[in-house]
Image (cartoon, rainbow, N blue to C red; front, side, top):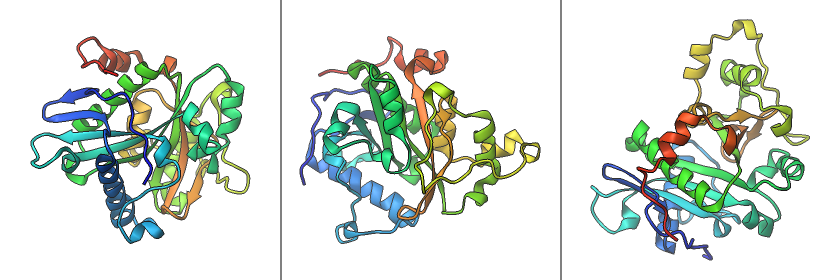
Length: 274
């Protein structure tokens, strides 16, 4: 397996026994891919292809990505056995080598990048946290790492897909309707689902939506994105391979809520080292 090992090798954040950093070798990348398989295929019911033989999730984008890891140093064994969460990071310059971003298979991200040729884009994807680590502490560790990465590479805009389970948007009608009415990106940053895959998000009258229940019904990752100021695109897409309903997330760094910039980017955070 070809893989890209980042020159950004230092610790990007730490909370208690949890350390966040980038993968440093092929063994750590493969361990992250096995966690992805465990979550996407075993737990969430994605449709396996050739990955089923070796039980790891990978695609043509993996060799071009940096793989953000959370390790629990209270666990024994070598570092690749301590990985409890992972995120895939694809910078725009690397995406060009693949002919575009992963998200472009579902959303018109290429039109957004064309409207902002001076901005540096980063795609977030393949977010996975082991069940026993699905806590605020793990999410905060991941965001420490993402923030350090943004600063190191001078990223201007974060984008990516976020998923609801299943392939029936109506099962998430209240949450999707709330997002479509209250969390849409401005015209400057809006992205539409690709033609032929577009599914509406406004599924019930807004008068029938209760904010508290709509937000409670959202996946933790979507709520985490909203907390830092993310906005959503136009329409959702059914991903039959992963058995999900996907929405598009866009986060211009300059619009991220100031309290999160202070929290994750403060001088008390461990510095990234090249």
